[in-house]
Length: 315
Image 1 (cartoon, rainbow, N blue to C red):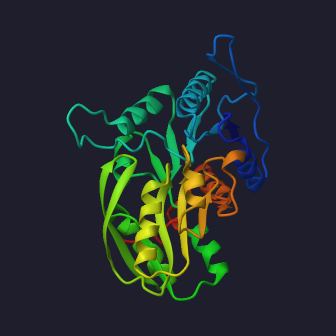
Image 2 (tube, one colour):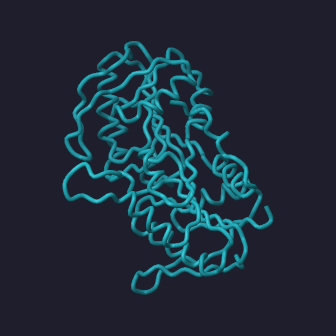
């Protein structure tokens, strides 16, 4: 572990510091600022020649700023002769356009994967991708972590009785099933039709939620419209308390205001994205993934398998 070096951009320095505490190492020094015209200025202030470098930088809002910071830091580390550079991206942005589902649209997830490779990343470590097939967009090794263990530990401590796990859409069935298996709970699915990227119409619910305490599972919450509509549907179907376990709390636009006025009793998110002061709410609770990333980084450095960190994810 003496050759491990951990850097952070400006996107989420606190998470990087928490990961370093778990690993008992110091966060390495790097200058990441701006020139007078707004261009990103980077200088690596420690010797990284022959070192195993981990660069922690979620591509969360402002997405373009944080992505460019990540790319320029990768280039600087490559030119400084680092032995191996692992891009640790707790939240992988530009992931929602992962296929060509309409004429004349890009596949931005593949584009970003190519850029990261070209910039100098030798490996990528990320958490709960928006779509599993994004792993195949990379020509370099990618380790995909899941937040299920930290979420399950949180809800297990709440000792919720008469529980049902709900997937707000068909795409999240696999993950919801894994939660249902861990909790030995019923599984339900909200069948919905999407009118636009930020608007949905709920059709009906597949499964039993009447009289149940519900945990809705999803990978991210942006504007919150889809999640709130799903909560409204399960409440109308007779659910009691409604919890939401969402890995990435993007919380754009007026998401927090809408959640505060919704049927959701508690929204639980991870710290993969920093929670802005303006987005703090009594309904929002945060669980940390620092120890999860620290263990993964340690195992990558020691060339050990990290599959033990997500063996609970089944088909």
